[in-house]
Each structure stands twice: as C-alpha cells, then as structure tokens.
Length: 431
Image (cartoon, helix red, strand yellow):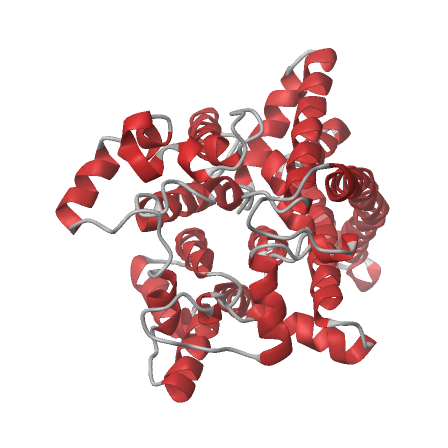
C-alpha cells in the first residue's frame, strides 16, 4: 500500500506526463524527418521527367510533320493545349455552351477550367497558359503527396520504394497528359490527397468534401465512394452507425457534380447536359444494352481494336500512325489490360489495401463499361494513368527486380513518354 501511495504521490504525475512528452517529441521528430524528404523527392522526379516531356514536345513541334487535317500550332507553348486542351481553354475564356445532339464543351467538368480562370485573373496570364500552370502545379503536388502517402502507408518503408513509385508515376507513358492542358493531373492530385487524408484519419467531413470537389473535376470522381464507404465502416462502431454517417455525409461527397448539374439545369434547362454532350462522341453507334453487355463480357472492345474486320474499331482505321509501336490507339487496350493485371496482383499480394484496389477496380470498370464499346477503347490509356494504385504495385515489383532490369523498364517508359509527347505536339491523333 505504501508503495502504491509513493507511486501515486509522484510530483505532478510525472511518469504519465513524461511519456506524453516523449510521444509528442517523437511525433515531431518523425514529422521533421518526413517533410524534407517528401518535399525534395517529388520535385526532383517532377523536374527530371518534365524535361523529357519538354524535349519530346520540342522535337515533335520542329521535326515531325503535322497531321494532314489539323495545322500545327505556330508556337511550342500552344502545342500543350492540343485536342481537348482547346475545349478547356474555351471554357476558361468564354464559359460553357450547349446544343442538343451536338458534342460541345459542356461535356467537360468545371473544376479545372474554373481554376485556370482564377489563375488567369490573379496572374494576368492567358487562359491557355494559366491552365498549363494549374496542370503542372497539380502534378507536382500529386507527386509530393504520393511520396508522403507511400511513407505513411508502408511505414517503415525503404527509400527506394518511394523513388520507384514516384518514377513509375512520372514516366508512365500515357502520363504525358499530366503536363498538358488536361484535367488528369488535378484529378490525380485530388484522389491521392483523399487517400492520404483517410490514412491520416482526418475528419470524415473533410474527406467527404474533397471527394465532392473531385466529382467536379471528372465524373469518375464518384469512384472514390467505394474506398470512402470502406473507410467509414472501419471508423464506425456498428453497421447502423456507419449508415448514419454515410447518410449525413452523402451531400458532401457529391456536391461538385450536383452543383454542375444545377448550373446546367439553370442555364440550359438540362441537368444531364454533360452526359448528352458526351454521348454525341463515338466511333461506332451505341448498341442495345443487351448486346453491349454481351460484347463487354466477351471482351469484344479489346479484340476489335486488333481485328481488321471490325471496321471503325480497327486501330489502323483510327490512327494516323501506321506503326503499332507509335500508335496510342493500338496501345490503349494494352495499357488498360496492364492496369487490370497490376490491380489484381496488388490485391492478391496484399500490396494494396481494400480501399486501394476497390478504387482501382471501380475506375477501370467505369472506363470499360461506360464508353469502352462506343469509343473502341480510345482514351483508355489516358484514363488508366490516373489509377494511382497501379504505381504502388509497380513500385513493389521494381523493388524486387534486379536494378539493371528496373532501370531498363523505367528507361523504356521514358522513351515512350518522349515519343508520345512528340506526336502530341505534332497534332497526331492522341486523345
């Protein structure tokens, strides 16, 4: 009893306070150790790989002949806004327009062009350059956040894993769109930040609000609901508690797309204007839903790209580049299939958490089932680039490879990245 009294009579309860202080000091040390590495690795990887992009764009602008039906922009800076970049520039400069049964700019979601307009007003830059600034800053922030997420997710983690994950994301061949006037980089940053906040157990309303903003970047932002539901269930005491939280947070998770629908309803009288505009773009007419389900089940969109008897779906009938190695049209199904395999490997090896592989699977399913048939897998390589869990799996695989093999793989990806950038600058059919 006296021993207990002496222990309790310790002045100011020092043992508990000291433990708390040591814990706080350790946390501060870990934070101070983490910040410099995360803030340096991301920018270094961004700088090296962006140099490759600029080199490819310069070579393409100066040396590669333009596509026959599209004139090459006179300035190199204008080449960064080819194809869909022109739509985003028009939105940032003039706002939205809608015409029924016509493909128009209302098909593109508002977060990215609105940020570009804001940067243009603050800096005085032209909308095209302002959007390019948003793209590059978003991709830089995405790399920094991805490095922080890997360190948090796989703690303790070897430094080379972080480097491999970041380089895999930065040299992924279709990732050249991250440095163009496209919304992919902003979408990538928002998704990685969402996972980082979930891993840090940030307040649920903050995570839900960020998901809502992501739905204003691109419609696949709704795929973040899959990992969010799993996260809420993990942080709930019971199923009933989970359902109550989800009901309360539901408006926050979709405020972006809901606001866009309200805007188009008010301005054009059509809340689904974006869907109707997107449906006007296709390479072959949409079939009946039963036939489409059958075609998707038997992987017809994949096979048709490489079948000369498939008409408009055959890659040589879509691409200006008659070399399969140079044609992104021919490579789109390959990148999609590679991403699907990486997600399955990551789930099987448990390198990916249920939140990560469910998000990756949802994005791939939405890309394939949504417009895979009508678009003949066009743009699927670009859509795959934002499925960031594949970079976690690639990082794990590269860490386990002999260094010469890992280096050769990254170098091969860098070569493709340069070639795609050059062809994009020359207005070849890369979307």
